[in-house]
Amino acid sequence: MENIIKCPLFKGISSEEVNKIIGEKFGIRKFEQGRTIIKQGDEYSTLLIVIDGEVSGEMTDLSGKNVIIENIPAPNVLAPAIIFAENNRIPVNVIALTQVTILPISREDFTYMLQKNIKLLNNFLQLISDRSRFLTDKVRLLRFGTIKSKIAGYLIEIYSKKDNLRFEIKHSQQELADMFGVTRPALAKTIGQMTDEGLILSNKKEFKILNLNELYRIYRENA
Image (cartoon, rainbow, N blue to C red; front, side):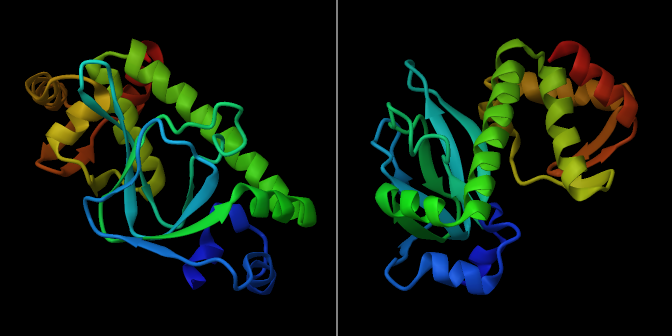
């Protein structure tokens, strides 16, 4: 349970305070790799916190095609903006990418926690705001961006997290294609073009950014 202290929901809150907030009455649930934790369209009336492992948020469109919205590693909160929504049906399938440990907290219990701890309330409001910004950027990129700008934005995001121009990504080309809503051949062709243009080097899941400024320009102008 010590991993939960690192969750953004509990930022700036001591481990002693977290233990008081959580208490002893909440159990945990475990899911094996590949299991569906919650289905798209299900009512989301219990806040789920990923304590260990990593999950994927995937959306199925009307044609039955899956689009990967994001991968969420522990420790993190699932769908914080949905729990208090009037229509609180979750818009994605949440799949366990690894063995996953989840801490569930009912909406009623979580409401009581927010009323009792101002730091927790502020952290939760920031989570909702950050999620709104992320989803807005994501929709804009998926809807309006070119394949090149989608790749540029993705690589910039990884670079900003790792602070290194050379890194290894988690996704295969097929997973990236699903995430961007494009075909795998089109994605591979664009990666090849970006390599020929001297923007990046790539070898399977290994990437090196050669021209960061140009990647930023492509992302901003086409997103």
